[in-house]
Image 1 (cartoon, one colour):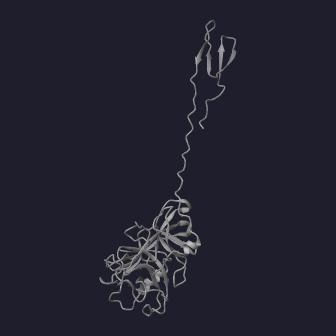
Image 2 (spheres, one colour; image 1 turned 135 degrees about the vertical axis):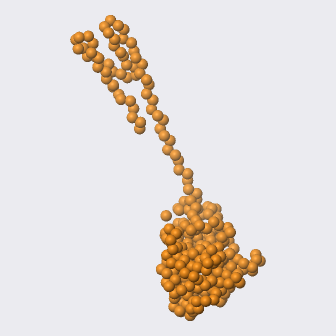
Length: 319
């Protein structure tokens, strides 16, 4: 476990149809206009009889379907109301946040960057939902821009709502709900509060095979290697979806030897804390190629560099 230092017409019938008739041997031409009734002239001395013409009707106009109005989304709360809400950062525990048992988190291959200093977070994508927390536009202690991963989207006015990862917990291990706690949390937020950007890669950590891989959207693997993971007592997160919260170098974490640390939004499922922080899970270099971690993912120097080239907010999946 590690932490930062300091903590998208029907045409009508032809009109005036004309018929020319030649009668006897004098070449007398008679023009008969056809409107609703046409006339047939027979041989000399015979009666002219009206010939009915079929009535022409036009097809009724095709009705234009009306558009179903998009559902509303919550109005943005006032600055005062937002300031009174708990801030979702890596050390916070906020019960209103959602975990993997409460949402169907599916990779939307999209990251979300806040447009505003504080983004209201909700437990449901409903117009009358009340916010449960806020997400800051900068990462606590690092002062780097916040970018998170999008896992779902609802229809709605102004782009609807998006399901995003948060850096907080909704409870800690041993809080009365058992010895373990969810490693990652999610919340709904207004799409209008973010700039949404597409991504084409995901980081996957496989606990069964002890591997880490960067996988492209088409399913091909960019790079992969064996990783050193946690123990049964201090496991690496399992069946967890989160995001790359930050990527930075911290000289004070000497064992990383100057290689970049990829900080995830996931926490230990069994540890309430580690080293003075909330037991965050990181992907980092470690000089000893053997042994296990306290839940972090120990990787090679080459993998740290490959991860550092990914955009912040890249989805991360632990299986």
